[in-house]
Length: 168
Image (cartoon, rainbow, N blue to C red):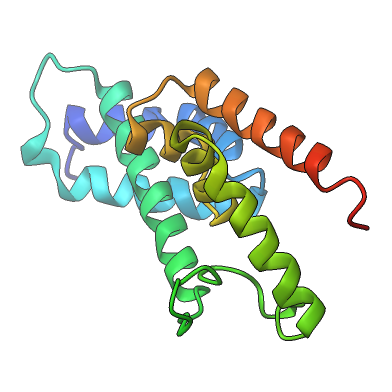
């Protein structure tokens, strides 16, 4: 009968913490279960990369977060349409967005023209959000505090509503 290593016992002892964090990330019990399994497997396969005396919980939660982000980005890439317009504006818009109709194309170009007049500090986070990026990803990519990103997206959306209030 072989005895399991202290590392394996520690990793297996983290399952409750991993499950809790996975549920926060995914908001889905089955997806959380899969994420816990993927994280556990990756941690066990990379035991040699874990430094003794390091924070095992932090290391494993980082692995989980990275797996979650990579899976999310893969899903976004798989669901992204190729945009053949000259200004690449329609990138990441759903097929049923209405841009195929003359009225829809006019609306998109009008909104795009309005957004082009906004300061880049406001339009860039807003465009990234519309393209499907999460607030945290936008904050990281633009090197902005999370609260600033949320605030700028909120105010851009609010300003667009004011400008386009008579449009409907």
